[in-house]
Amino acid sequence: MLSLLQSLFKPDFLFAVLRITAPILFATLAAVVAERAGVVNIGLEGMMMITALFGFLFSYWTQSWVLGVLGAIMVGVLLGLMMGFFALKLKTDIILAGIAINMLGAGGTIFMLNMFTGLRGNTGNLVSPNLLIPTIQIPLINKIPILGEILSGHAVLTYVAFLCVFLVWILIYKTPIGLNIRAVGENPDAASSVGVSVLKIKYIAIGISGGLAGLGGAFMSMYYSQGWNSGMVAGRGFIALAAQAMGRGEPVGAMLSSLLFGLAQALRTKVSGLQGVSSFLVSMIPYAATLLGLVAYSISLKRKARKHVIKVVKN
Image (cartoon, rainbow, N blue to C red; front, side, top):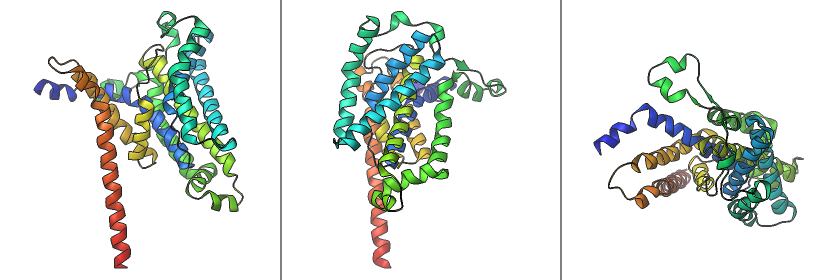
């Protein structure tokens, strides 16, 4: 136990936390943007699986990791718009549309992989270094002891993930489209009464959500797993929904929640190397963290509501 506690404060562990957090953060920000427009994007898991596959395939076909990432974003946007079409135009329940995307991501990707490449289950035979997202050594920072070991040397998309927190905050709070997204999410009838196209704004929000999920998928196949394999997303899309709820729909809160789940995932990896620890128990750590986080979130909401009621009664 002492050796475990000592290893948790080492730079390589904190480096791993940031690396593991990145795909969760992309998906969490995707959930934040959709939720702000009043749309529950429960299809994040499937979106990440599908975009992970196509991101890698585009990278392989073009021999360019940049085009692979752009392809993943494009596929993510298309999946978001498709889900929006079924939910908003055809009036299908948004939850059912999301479940359909998740089922397509779970089973359909294996069929598509075989159709496009003849492979089954993974793309291990296609992997080469030029297809993967490169890492960056940050000048000056990489020379700083400990801090440089934690912050420098990550993949490009790791830094993009944390940059997206700021960009999503700018989008939501400092742009006209963000104002419309918040208005539609809070009161669509009021937004419509002042000339805002509710349908258009929801399409935009779920398209952006799909694009962010695409970045998460590209990260998974083109860096984290270094190739696509079935089940690689491993519940990160669902964890992102919990992180979004815990972060109360705020980009910064989403980042902090994602870091918490990234810490839980990294802890699972670290604990799995210890002798005498059940692998089944270890595999539960991220999901136990999710449940505990949601319980804490629920308790905080109840306390906030109770304080509001007390304040109203006193007034």
